[in-house]
Length: 106
Image 1 (cartoon, one colour):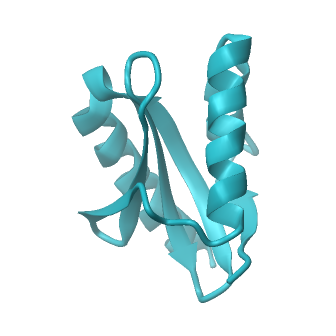
Image 2 (cartoon, rainbow, N blue to C red):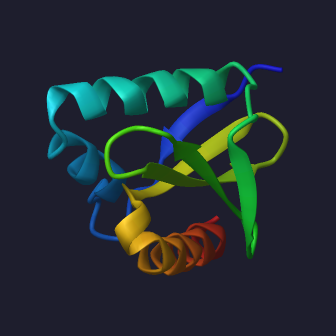
Image 3 (tube, helix red, strand yellow):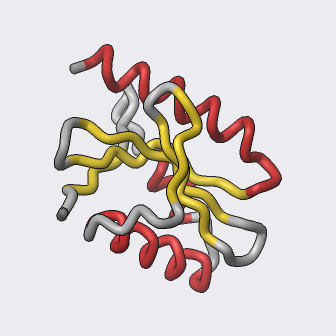
């Protein structure tokens, strides 16, 4: 299955996932880009549900990067947040809040 990847944009048109991504170093950004490409192509082997419709893609590199996302229907993935193992709990709660906001805005 192939998914369309979209990024969450808040009510003031800020792309918060992209802001996080652009602050990564080149090697980390390459790993994140590869992970997103895998998601796009349906590879969810490193994915687990974290509740509330939000999922986490674990990347075994550096400080343990994570991508939080949700499925919008059967063909769309919404990137909600990114982070590391150190801030995992906070990042998951942030992603859940963004997912609720996204759904309310539909």
